[in-house]
Amino acid sequence: MKQLPQSRSLSFQCALWLGFLCVVLQLPVHAEPWQDSSLADSLRLNENGPNLTLPVPLPAGKPVPVPEVQGYKTESTNRGPSPNTLDEFSSLALQNHPRMKAARASVEGARGEAVQARLYPNPTLAGSSPQLAGADSQWNGFVSQEFVTAGKLKLAQQAALRGVQRTEYELVRARYEVLTGVRRAFYKLLVAQRKLIIFKQLYDISNRSYRLGQDLAAAGEGTKADTLFWSIERDRAEVRLLNATVDIETGRRELATAIGLPMADVGSIEGDLFQVLPNFDLKHLQRIVITRNADPQAAETDIARAQWQLERSVVEPIPNVTVMGGYQRQVTPVGLVGAPEQDQGVLEVSCTIPLFNRNQGNIRAARAEIAKARAGLRSVEIGLAEQTARIINEYRQARRQAEWYQELILPKAQETVRVTQLLYSEGELTFLRLLEAQRILTETELSYVQSQGTRWASAAEIANLLQLEDFPLTMATPAAIDLEFVKQEDAMERQPPELIPPPPQ
Image 1 (tube, rainbow, N blue to C red):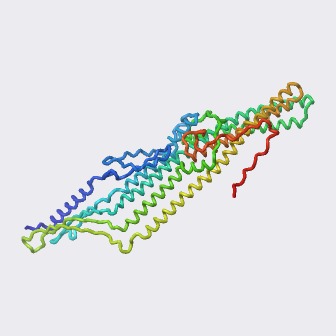
Image 2 (cartoon, rainbow, N blue to C red):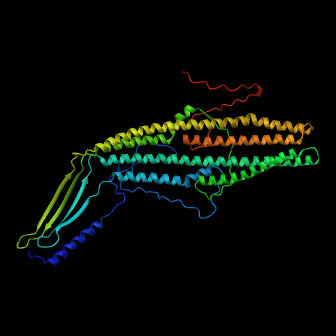
Image 3 (tube, rainbow, N blue to C red):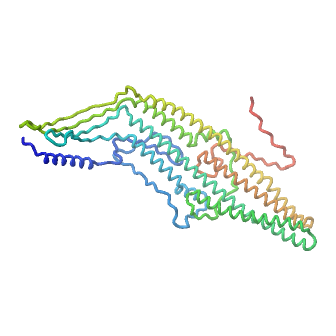
């Protein structure tokens, strides 16, 4: 066989190498090469609450559509939507708040990691030439594939799926924290609107009192001290009225921010500030909160993920098997006329022997991680119980204060104004006494409204702990009990409330 010149041989081999690289570069690459129906088990939880169903396999042969993650964009105009009810604000918040978008993106990212954890290693394609040119030139090509043993990919994906479940519980938590922010801002603005009305009434009373004091002083029936007193009261009322208008504007912007649309136009809102809310049994409520809240369930997924990671660490020492097959060609050596060119096949099987490293340290760490996750679950439950007790304390005090103002204090203040008006009409009291009674009534109404604001803020936190979609709270709310206030007709005969006895030893 005639030997090719060295230059032609070198050109021929370079052409073979270029062709080999073109084949490698033109290999199809699939973003999600589904191998079987169990490649990625999707744990999809509803945002309205947990749904601990078994993992549902993703469809085989079809890529899962991934929703586009839209970034937060500032409104280009100075105007936006104009909601005025709590339901409208809540709906806008769930659609537009960046925290909701980030939580949904985190869930999708965790699902992608679960898909990636089950993908099989790619084969390796290689080529080489021990001697690129010359009389004894050689070139070869090899294909190798690593075969994963002991179900390591399945175990890794199961651990990743627990991460998916964790992010979905975090999405549930983010949903209700966003709703809680909207509810608190909504009722804060509702309280500010009511305060503005009261401050207007208080300013009118103080202004009339000041003018009357001036008239009486001019007629010689009053003193300068009375005039100065009412002047101070009028100035105080005016300042409080001006501050109330600032509270209104600030409350509107806070509510717009709570829904994730800072440029939204928020005007007068509609809501029942004086709606009756139930009482709660604390111990029963603590038990239900721990059962319903997403935080303990998220902590349980941490335990499950740590257990899967331990199983994955245990099988890690079992070696994977790598198989390599190839072809090698060698040209005829110089001086061997008539000798055929040599074609050779190459086969290699290799694996790692776990002689020194048997993954002992990672197994030990995985076991400690399980203990840590279990302690974390207990800490979450204790924290929720403590938080529930603190919020119920604030809620009970504010609700009881509101009830006492409504049932006892406000009726007395209103009766005082009625009696004072009657005595003034009969000439037994001066007009200043009548205005003073009206001012006391207005101040009482203001304190009543402030207690209502505290009551609603605590109620929003209770709904957050219970992760309730429906708000305000009703008697159908878990752990709700009847109102505890009992009105007594004769206030003079009322006895001091008994102290709560200590628990028996």
